[in-house]
Image (cartoon, rainbow, N blue to C red; front, side, top):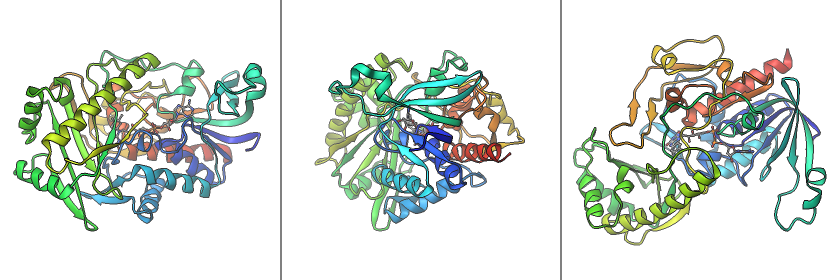
Length: 434
Ligand SMILES: Cc1cc2nc3c(=O)[nH]c(=O)nc-3n(C[C@H](O)[C@H](O)[C@H](O)COP(=O)(O)OP(=O)(O)OC[C@H]3O[C@@H](n4cnc5c(N)ncnc54)[C@H](O)[C@@H]3O)c2cc1C
C-alpha cells in the first residue's frame, strides 16, 4: 500500500470494480477499499444475478465484456435469451479478484473508513482502519492513533451504493419523495431436479407467459415468476393462492417471486425475493436489522412452499442467504447535474456521457398494481451527474448518482453501473493528464 494515490475508489461492488480496474489499467495509481471480504457488492454479496440486458449501443463496456470472457473461462457464465450477463456469484468473486490483481490496483478488503480529511472543498486524504476491529483487539484503547492509517487521495470515487462517503462529508442529497422501493433479500436453493421442475413449469405455463427454459451446454436453465399484480396472466397464481389458503405462505410472501438458474451450479436456482412490502425502506441500522430478520423468516417459508408445491424441489435445501440487504432506492447525491426521468423519456444527449442504456424504468412498489416497468428508448447519463456539487474531487458511480427517484429505477441495473464506473475512471484520467 502506498501513502498517496491518484484515485481512491471506496466500494468494490459493481461500479467500483469497473472504475478501479479501468483507471489502474490506464496507468492511474488506484486504491480500492471494500468493507466486505469479497469484491462484487450486490452481484456477489447480494446474490443479485443475472445482470439485466441493456442496449448493445452502450459504450464504456470494456470491463463488462472482459468480465463476461473471464467468467466464461471459469464456467460461471452463460448467454440466456441473448443476455450474456448470467453469472455464478461465487465464481464472480474469484474472477473479480483476478481482474483487479491483473490491473495493478491495490485492493483492501474488510476495510472501513475512519475519517475523511478536507481542505476547503477538496478531499486531501482518507483515514482507514488498518486492523479489523473487534472486541478482542488489545489496542482498542489507543483507537485513532494506532488503528488508523492516513492515505492521500487526489480523486475519490464513492461507489458504496448508498453514498457513504458523501454522507460522512455531509454532502447534499436529493430529497426522497413519498415513494420508495421495498428491500428484498436474495437466496439460493440447491439439489433441485431441474428436469422435473422445468417439465412441470412448461406444462403449467403452457402459453409461456412468464416461463422460459433453455438447454445450454447440456444443462437446463430457466426463469419464471409470479407477482400479485394483475397486469399479467400468471400461470403460477393458483399454486401461490393454495399455499396462502393452506397457511404455508403469508399474503405478503406472494407479492413478488422470481427465480433464475445459475451457471456452474447445477440443480440450483437464485430467488429474487422475498420483497419486503411491510418494512420501511429507510437505510437505518434498526430498519435493516428488522428487515434482514423478517426476510430470513420469509425465506424459510418460501423454501418450505417450494419443497411442497413444486415438483423437483422435494430434496432441495437453502444453500445461500445473502447477508446484504437488497436496496433498490438508495441515497442519491446532489450532483453538478440532476439526471431526471424526463431526460430518459426525451432521450436527451449530453456532451460527456458515461453510459448509454435503454433498461426500462423499473420501480417496485409496496402496493399491489402500483409497480412500474416502463420501456423507454436509449438514454445517456452525463458525467456531471456523477460529480458531487459540494466536493470538487469527489465522484459517485453506481445506483447512488445524482438522479431523481424514477430515473434511479432505470439506471440502477448492473450493465449501466459497470459503464458508469468505466466512464468516470476515464474522465478522471483526463483530469490527471490535463
Ligand atoms: C433485490 C434487487 C434485485 C436486483 N435485480 C437486478 C437484476 O436482476 N439485474 C441487474 O442488473 N440489477 C439488479 N438490481 C440492481 C443492481 O444489482 C444494483 O443496483 C447494482 O449492482 C448496484 O451497484 P453499485 O456499484 O451501485 O453498488 P454495489 O454493487 O452494491 O456495491 C457497493 C459496494 O460498496 C461496499 N461498501 C458500502 N459501504 C462501504 C464503505 N463504507 N466502505 C467500503 N465499502 C463499502 C459494499 O460492500 C459493496 O461491495 C437489483 C437490485 C436489488 C436490490
